[in-house]
Length: 392
Image (tube, rainbow, N blue to C red; front, top):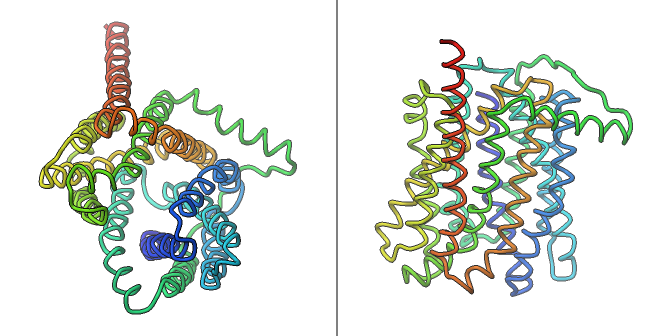
């Protein structure tokens, strides 16, 4: 309860901060390029931090990590109120520091959860996190819009700082006994420890297959973020600010997840992940080609549900299959893959948009994703057949 409540409060602050920093950067520079540079620089710089996040998670007290990262974030979040045109460069540094602390925090929270709840309850526990995140997405744009109109973007940064403080205090009350596992003492041991954590993947087929699939969907996710303004403005003709309806549709879909997770609990987790991924692929095709607002809105509700289920099962598969002492490093590798393919998506999205258009750009990557999903299903069926033959 403490972990989910603290995470929920912190996530609302994060969404308000993301809205506030975009507004502030654009207001100060009047340049979309300044906003793009911030997101791109954050993505590139995250990779080494995510590597270290896994090692820190596996070697230190996880509760202490999430308390400290949130409390340190209070001061950094508050410094954004001093942003001016002359101090713009400081905003990029602060954004990077805040993102780095968040990566360490998320890695530690993910690794801590299996120590707080039984394994059979992990998928449902992750679904609680997911639905609260959907509530955050649903509430944050309206809250941010009202507060910004009445005050200014600085109040959003102050609320974010306060959310970190409240989350840090709540996390401090979690009853947790630290199980220390590794103690890297030098830069060479850091490299060795990281490689040891990532090599564990070769022993767990389900997790390895999961990593292959999430890479492609991370790329598709960046396509969605890049193209959604054009879909609203060009395809649906509801103007660029119509993307706020997209966020609400995704949030509505996410709210349905806990009920669905209970129904899916009897099926093999990787199979659910693959079938959900196939539905996401089909949803992207509809999103990329539809000229109807109603059809697009419905497809986004479905995508919101399937996004959440895919995210829940990816975390649960890692938490259930990977030994506790390696979860931090394996999860950090998972995040590194997502970040790397998101960067690739940023690089190729615009050229594809200019050459083949939105729908065809989605279709090219969707075909790859469907082939990979079907390949994994066939591989699993063959493996099951072989096992049954040996048993006979």
